[in-house]
Image (tube, rainbow, N blue to C red):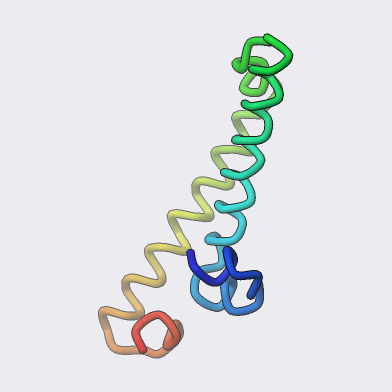
Length: 85
């Protein structure tokens, strides 16, 4: 997580395709929560606006990507050489 925090987005995507996306999502959730609390609005409204089908597809892609990474590292392929270097 150090690469996106230091502004090196290209290296962050090389380490993990979903890492910078997860960090941006987490930062967005923090900002949304702070704004909602300052305005005294319930924070649950965000989850009412999310499409569960889209979330399931994204979760499937993330899990599939992670499985491919683990298998490729386990069999000694260097698809993700930056991670194991």
